[in-house]
Image 1: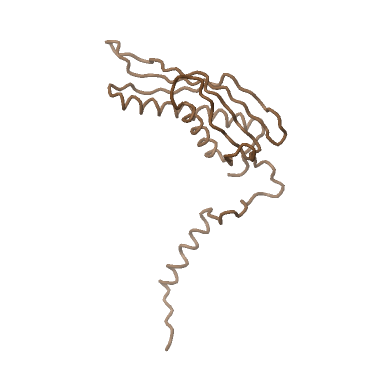
Image 2 (image 1 turned 135 degrees about the horizontal axis):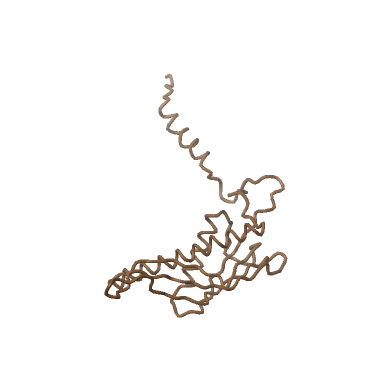
Length: 184
């Protein structure tokens, strides 16, 4: 009996392997490739911030948004601060919701969320504070709604956007200090 070679079945097996090989996937636990002598890759931890305001869950929203932005910027995040090279701790010390625009009948059309944080960056390996930043502010605007549920959704989006802006500023400050996440 002769064996028939079927190029289609061969391609069906080979093509996914080639595609996955070039997508950046790697085995879990395998070290990430880096250039020789690359010591700039520093891990960072961001424990949940302290909430010193009456706004519920603003500390969680702010912490999560900052973590997400740092991940986007290429910072390797770790959960345990004792395992990180750098730790950012923070306190949400003020939260305000201010009317930004009104219609002719004095109904609020738009609000501005303003977050004020105190942030500290510490190098856990050297056991030293790199900087303390207080106050650090972030703001974002959102449209008012007559529906209370929609109003809360809009406000939460604005809180996340204000937090993301803080995170972008934070990332720029880390870069200015020559603290780098290393290659993404």
